[in-house]
Image (cartoon, rainbow, N blue to C red; front, top):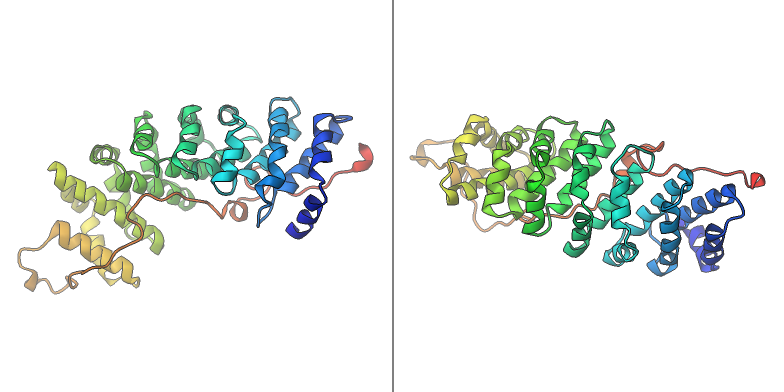
Length: 352
């Protein structure tokens, strides 16, 4: 439990453990010590960064070594350390770990999930921290990650992209500038399994709401309107609002650029779905649908349209800006065995 973990940390167990990692008697001892280290860093509430950051240099040494089992557990420890505020992320980045993490993401291995999780935690931080991952050429790995056979890897890859797309306009431009990347994400937002679709929707929404008008035009050219309209009949209120907000932003940019995006929406059965959403059980969805219809589609004779809801006045919505996504569900959703959270295990210390 985290309570017993804190008792052990309070007894200053970290430093002797690190010494055994730096100078292990044998590989078996090293493997057991790194596994123990990962559990020192694991759990919510997290240990204070001051209790675990001294382990980061030892983790770097392990990752540069050749003990595969120790490297896997070291990466899980790093993912737990980085899963906090900006102070935690800074502690990881100060060891110049970004290039090493991105290098691991280039091929299939049991290290892939914890390395990608760590990168994802880093980009939930501030723009400077996100830029450190981009500067390490993370986007070069996107084709491999988005095409990975494992659904959990696709999901987390989209999660990472959604947080990059919630950054600066320059960072959004980097995502759009990666050939084929955005088109594949847009396709996944429409056709992937639902858990992957949700993360892909966030990428599209963050670009549409946080990018320049030319970024928005670019994502439309990738098929964003088709994907967003396909989502207007889903049974998920939160993601409906995310999709509606993205669609609203796209239509607004269309007006500014003189693009007939309203016709695109109509051709994708989007207008019909928007009209149906006026009967949605969520008041927020209803209001947003009405606002989009009245603002962008209008009606020559509103008095004749009995189905048109009253005009919205003064309501605001929380989905109007790109949002960093701190994923709290990965450990619950992803099964242990290398596809999700680090599996619990026990070790035979008699063999040391």
